[in-house]
Structure formats: structure tokens, C-alpha cells
Length: 217
Image (cartoon, rainbow, N blue to C red; front, side, top):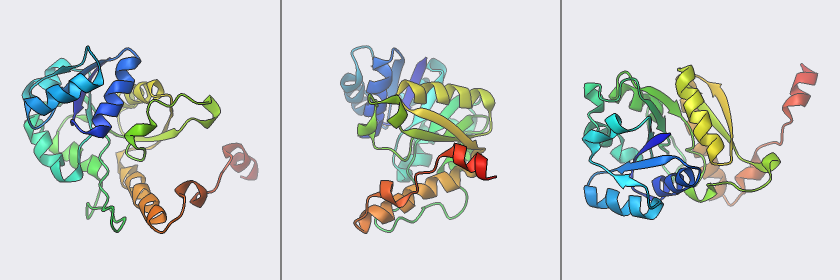
């Protein structure tokens, strides 16, 4: 698959490196060509940098891996508001959380819905925002692999996103439509609050066996 990374930071580089090692082609863009070229060089020998306006035409999937503050300007660089991303799967990894308070920054809706509004016609999927880039690729026991929640409204886009999540060594799990993305994003705020208070978020969430839930219902 041809994956376009919108972002040149640690998350974009970690994801790109993992996907490149799984055989996917990586194209990187950012605010300037120099940063994109640097990031592509860190990802893999075959990764390439491109200008923002060319990204959508040269990839199958676009992965948004940038800070909340730069989200709308970055989508404008791709000509998203003009419809340049229409028909493309766009995976939003934005962590729209105030890491001091744990509060979700969008007053209503979600970062994923901001992406959808700024890129009319794009098939947006929320995924991967809860895990640090250093998580990927996961190479441990399959039974211990991370579960990555996906939110989206388009079946084909969810299938593409699931394929890429699986390539990271994780287990994709569709939990709802794009309207569920706010709840998924708020989970990052909860994790932030628990960690800031000195707790391990893993131990703040019950270990629930879905089969037992079925038995109890």
C-alpha cells in the first residue's frame, strides 16, 4: 500500500518505519520540504518526501500524525478544504488533549470530525492516538498485542486502516462510527490524568474477558 504521512515528528517516523519494514511504500510531507526529506531519510531507504499539494494524488491512504494546534493549517496545505482528499482514506492519529489537565481540547465533537470537516469527501478513520510511537512495531506474543480502537463510517476505509494496524503487530477493533471518536479521544485524557497522578493506566482499567460478558448477558 502507498501510505502518505502528514507529519515529520516522532510519531510519523515510528509509524512510517514500521510500515516500511512490512513492505509498504512511504511518502512524507510536512510544513517544509527539508523536514519531510529528513523524516523520509530516517524512515527507510525507499521512503520519499513530497510537497503537500502532491501527496493525495500519489498515495492510497493518508495518515495524519501532527499536533492538534497544527491540524487545520496542515490539512489546508493538502488543499483538503478544496476537496483534494475526497475519496481517500484518512487515518487521524491526532491526540487532541491538554497534557497538563487531561482535558479534551475540542469543545464539541472530536479531532477526527475536525479532519472530516476540513477535508470534505475524505473517508476519515480515528486510530492509533492512544499509543506512543515507540510501541510500534509490536513484536511480542500475539495474545499480548495492543488492541487499537477504530472509529469510522466507511467500510472500505476501516478495512484499509485495519490492514495497516495489523501490519504494526496490533489487533484492530472497530468500536463505532466517527461519532464515537470523541469518546476514544477522551480516553487519552483519562490516561493522562492517571499517569499525572502517579498511577499506571494499565492498572486503572479492568481486565475484562468479552466471553464472560456474553455469558452474563
